[in-house]
Image 1 (tube, rainbow, N blue to C red):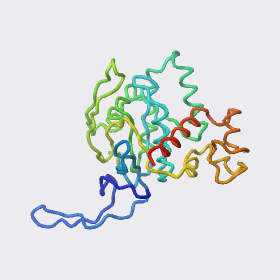
Image 2 (cartoon, rainbow, N blue to C red; image 1 turned 90 degrees about the vertical axis):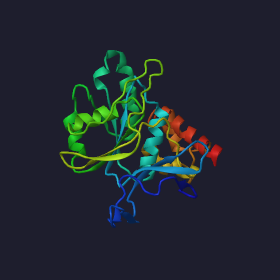
Image 3 (cartoon, rainbow, N blue to C red; image 1 turned 45 degrees about the horizontal axis):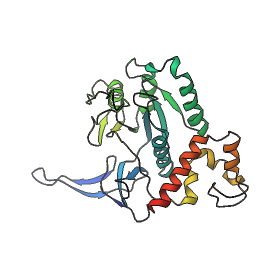
Image 4 (tube, rainbow, N blue to C red; image 1 turned 180 degrees about the horizontal axis):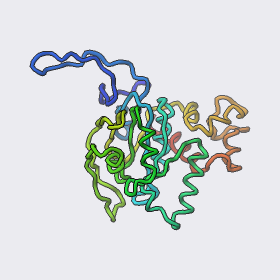
Amino acid sequence: MKDSRTTNPLAVGDIVDYDPGDEGKGMITAIHPRRNYIIRKSTNLSREAHIIASNIDIAFLIVTLDFPETKSAFIDRFLVTCEAYRVPVKLILNKFDLIDENYTEMLAGFKEIYEGAGYEIIEISAHTGYNLNLLREECNGKVTLFSGQSGVGKSSLINALDSKLVLRTGEISDYHQQGKHTTTFYEMHPLATGGFIIDTPGIKGFGLIEMAKEELSHYFPEMLRISDNCRFAPCTHTHEPGCAVKEAVEDGRISADRYISYLGMLEEEEKYR
């Protein structure tokens, strides 16, 4: 993380040593090394960072095609962070019951981009129960992070997974196409079937922690797979001749949308460095 500072030295998912003390005044005496974590910038233009959670077996990013639409820039920044900090991640396409023939093209485009990049997409409906059993199996015995922007149905989905969990849910604003923050802090919940779910507040933006421009493309799996074929190393895949990544974008083997996201992240890092 270079010289970025974290606002929370202790995060949900940390394994600690604890002295219960007397009269209920216990104390954490040590934090064990984290095997992975998810982290983001606390605020724009800030060198401070916030650790969302640690020691995660798998992260699920919940997204929706509409009402509200999850923007690709947010998805890509979350995925890059998972890649950078060694957190296995899958995409959950929630509210699948609302996707009809009007969304056929949008759904196909979404799958082409992210399955093409190498990510598994699980289609889910918390409302109808579609594929909930599949998701329960994915969570069984694991420490699982559920994250997403406000309004994607994260709390409803977690409630549907385990009837003993009663997380507060909210409505979507028709005007803003956004949800309210119904989860206000990070919390870990045990599952009746075994394992734990880490619930996170809805995230509006996801600022990356400083990454060298030469390494950013390593966190795009589809770029990493072919970057050894670039004429120059390291290659930023922007201006260099003989760049295999740019050639793959031009002939459609790499999504142009993902490449635009990559360029945006490069520009952001240069601007705020």
